[in-house]
Image 1 (cartoon, rainbow, N blue to C red):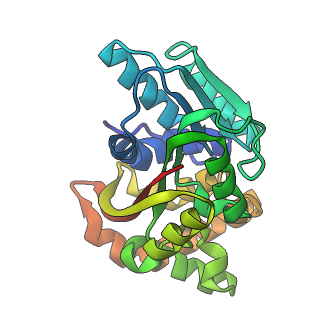
Image 2 (image 1 turned 90 degrees about the horizontal axis):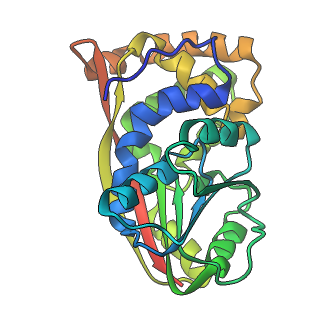
Length: 279
């Protein structure tokens, strides 16, 4: 899929997230997440921290293509702007998806409401991960499953490492402050977190793919603005600061960016862990 050109200043963060991060990253990772999840017709499914809805949209494609239907699909996010974009992109395609605003750490669903909980690149960003994991377990039926994707540590993601090291230096803050997306990269930590929440038979699988960027020159500007829709640290920066940092960080990481640019397109490796856990 060719990535659409996105103006760094023309859209709000949620729209940039959809137009930039979805084709560059999540369009490629979502099928892998769902391959592990194996959703089945008739199942009640919760898409937790759904963002602009890429996982739920892929679910609708899966069920439509095989002639089946889910029993229920609920897509939940704490950010109303993300949900607004999600609805605009999918209502005509999958009118049965229920878009709901809510907090993953305190879900307003009865015990045992779902057969499958999906959480793509969200768990590491929750303020209280343990509470969110317990809530995932609580809303699953006995024997239900949670399938969770988190990024591996910066050590396993070299481009992200260079990016976040530059940002840390520029702002004069610890790297952990600017890189929460990579803060749950240990497979053991993820397994312990889910086991402590009550899950059994937790398996964590290391997986690798790539990020695809058709417009490397605008990469940082778009990444900074799109991240503001999902990562509190970036949301706390004003537009001017984000723009200035994008320019500075681009200069810092230019040598490593050049390594990944081929025929005008930037393709860099990305590593994640996918956990499959049963209630």
